[in-house]
Image 1: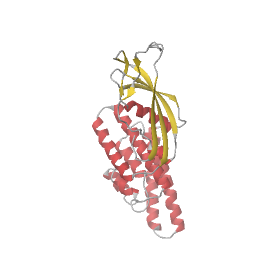
Image 2: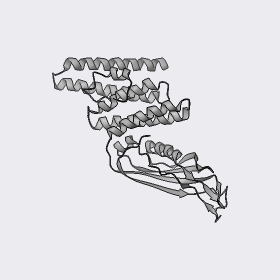
Image 3: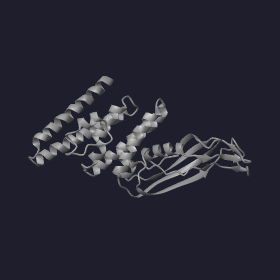
Image 4: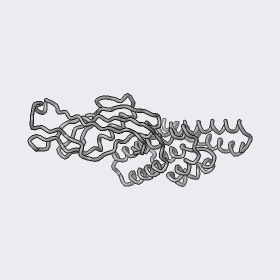
Length: 271
């Protein structure tokens, strides 16, 4: 999940606990696990753009080596996006392990993660760098399916942030950044759109081309279909308002309809 420099107020509270069934709750020589890594809380860009705030409570089982072996949601923020982000974030935190008589032990602790923002903005350069980095990391992950899925989830979140940004700001200049992240095939597929309409659908299409049969395939196809339909509507409305570029707009609509037909055929083949 990408880190964006939104001006949000960030608090991480560490509240420790230990199960009485494992240890004497009144044991005076027990020291709970503590956060050891200097970590920045990942605030999903999609949540930031939607101005979603909340608090998530997560239970973390910390090994003798200070690693988060198991994470469980204790109290939801009320938003799945924040809950999922908190669980993924908690897996990355490093701890000093719990101790009894200065001997490391495995034990549970609790993280309370607060997502609160004061001002949100979409950093195009940061988005570009994050997406390029994720592509590199996925390639380096090789056959590590778990790591691949984690990175693909991060990429999916990045694209969700991009889509939300374009919905709020019809910014054609964003295409310069999108174009720099996609394959040549996708770049050519959307070549007629780059100077005319913001095209976050190109980033979604790129996801499908690079990572077919991923666990996010159906989600991305759904999002891509919606973005293409929305773009088609935008182009039709623009044609009604002005006679300029009507021929060009008709060609763009044909390209969109062709891609929608292809997606529909793929869905039917899967079923």
